[in-house]
Structures are given as structure tokens and as C-alpha cells.
Length: 328
Ligand SMILES: [Zn+2]
Ligand SMILES: [Zn+2]
Image (tube, rainbow, N blue to C red; front, top):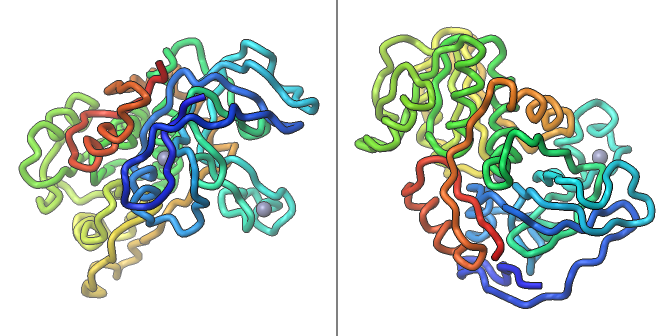
């Protein structure tokens, strides 16, 4: 089969012919229909994920059809449409796994990072970490739900019952989270790169009541802020915009260094925290919720062989919504 392979860091992915994958006992063999492009894939390519194992096929927002299976598979049948997210395997026995925090598993393995992912014509995935995909979505439309959607959802949940939610960085995750937040009666305030009128208009379309630049002071103090852009300088900005007792949640896997800031920005019981990975519970909850809202995803589609162009467009902020790769 053909795949876009990451052989070394800070170099383009290579269009490569590789061995067809063979499913192990718990694995599904999947024909990839669509695979979303996530900012984490950029961090992978840039060598910012220390746990990555090269060479690797990136891609952890996979929608595909089951075309084969290992002997121990019992949740899916040939022909089923499945989604494969970032969390690819956990040990089940460490103190994190046994306390409802498998997202922090000491030995977790991640799709498109240590396990070959979906920038390929086929892939294999452990069925215990796969999910059925609602017929309400086409394959490309469903792909962004699998990371942007469900990590965004976990990030939003960390904000508790905050009513006025700021979102910093209005890309794939934000456009989904804004719809979920609005459906729950919350107000969304969107912060983009200064002067990015296109992203601000997109945020309003997705339900934001206000959109401005990341350095603007919003018209009201926020109850919580979610940061999806990988810029550490946004942390003090978000704390500054957040009300006493409010929470700032960093939703990305990597960020540039956070600059020093006065304690007064954290004082008065503001909380600063991050979100790491996902649990299968997050995925089940979010995938059950999304079609009912209904969350609509906006995608920009590329052929699989154009993965490098998709990554470049994501890096340069040229996308409204989520990039998705389609194998031939
Ligand atoms: Zn574990
Ligand atoms: Zn992701």
C-alpha cells in the first residue's frame, strides 16, 4: 500500500510504498476513507513529541471500513465503519488506568506517533480503542470529530459550568467546541491572531458572540478560557481576560514557553491546567452527543499524497476548519 511516511524530523513526509499491515489478534484491518490532519501532526514532524518512534505513518483522526480482523476481535464486523482516535493502547493496570485516567497511562501508545496511523491507504488498530461512526456524517466530515472534537470536548469539560468561555486559536478544535458550548447555552468569545478577519468571521459563523484579536480585552470577563493555539504567550493573556475563580485550560500537546507574569494574574483562585490525550469515555460521550447537537464540521479536503501541503496550510493558518486527507 501507499502511505505518507515520517522518516526524519523537520523534513517533508515521503510518499512511500510499504508492506500492507497485518492485524494482530485484537486488531482491525481498516481501509482508510479519510484521515484528519491535526496540529499534533505538525508537532510530530517538527520533532516536538519526544515519545514518537520513527519511521511512523502519522494521522490519528481515521475513519475507515473494516476489511479484516484478528482472531480475538468481537466488537466489529467486516464492513463496519469505524473511527480510530489518538489513544491507541493502554496497559490497563497502572495507577492511572485503574483510576479512570487512562489518558495518563504510563505505557500508553498513540496512533500516528508510536503506532502507524491514517496517512495511508490501510491501517490496523486495536478494536478496544475504536468507535462506531454515526451515519449522520460522511467519512471526511466525521474525521475531525476524532481528535479536534473529542480533545476539544475534554478541554471544554475541564472548564466546568463556566458560562462565558474564551477560545484562543480558532481552528479545527475550536470550531467544534464553539458549537458544543453554544448548544449548552454558553457564550463563546473567540480570540484569533491579530488582524485575522477571516478567522474572526468564521468564529462568528460557528456561534461565537464576539470575536477579536488575542491581545484584545473582551467586553466581559471570562469564566474560563480554552487555549488551542500552541503559543505560550497566550497563557498570561488568557489569565488577564479571566474572572476571579476562573479556569484557563491549555488543550494542546505542545506549546512554546510560557513567559513570566505577575502573580496577580493567577491570584484570586484562578486555575491554570492542561489537558492530555483522551479517555475512551470521552470519545463515547462526545461521539454520542455530536450528531444530536448537531455538530457540523467544516473540512478542507486534500488527496493523501498532498499531506505536506495540508500541513503547510495548517501551519500558516490558511485553513477555516479542519484539513482532511482522502486516499485515492
Ligand atoms: Zn496504564
Ligand atoms: Zn490530534
